[in-house]
Image (cartoon, rainbow, N blue to C red; front, side):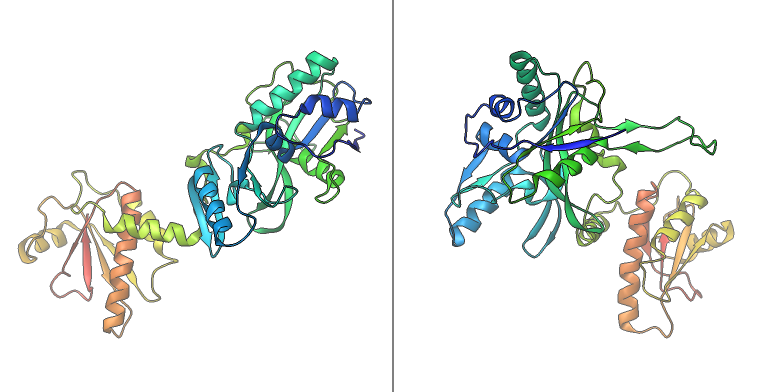
Length: 362
């Protein structure tokens, strides 16, 4: 494969109501079928009127920006100082909901296109119907990446090609069947186009030639295929936000053991899950012995008759007031982990003669 990345020069400033298909076709009469148009989302937003009027400076500008950010936010992921990482109504997770103040008048902010996939489809259809050009279109924006410094362009919308190249089921040169490999090719093409477009050169469109030999017969689901389902997202919150959510969940946990016997393997998993976050020296010991439970029913006031197991909690030694406070927090963490395994619990005094400071009845 031999790729060319070509800039589309001369488009100029785009304003609300402009015809992007006409601007691009006029600036790039050399376009060919199967080219991939990489279009900066900002000119799409400008043409579609996705602009917000704001004061040029001062606290009023910040307030107007915050209001726009709140309107574009479906869920707050993380907050650090003035930085807001949010999930937009499209499903994208990025800083400030993609709201941009660059390459636009100081009294305006640019929002992301309302439906980038629809924008890509409309542009592709206009080029095909009016200029007899069969191209693919990728609408892009700049994002950061978790765990990596620096920014790169990624795809927000796509038409005329699949967003993902799925290698699952293929066999590599060593005879191994690929199980998980799905390449976000439209993100890779978006990044390639950014090498030509730049941020200050006023080149909002690039063409990648040579990647496609033919466009897709239909537009498919578009870039929505790149949005990971929340159920599969292992990092759906920032660390501080996840901790706060966990503490809130722990404060409202159902109080009482379950009707069904607690699964010892599930109890062990819950204990293991909190092992790295509890205070040094805190020990949790699961007990399922029938004789111990029978003794507790007879000796511990309030012991639930239907409890099928317990977990003893021992703080670091020597025991001091601060250690007991830390143990209380650790017990709540364990209750949350147990609840995640489907095991309700209740907090009880320690059994007589035990070195434990507290116990959970399951």
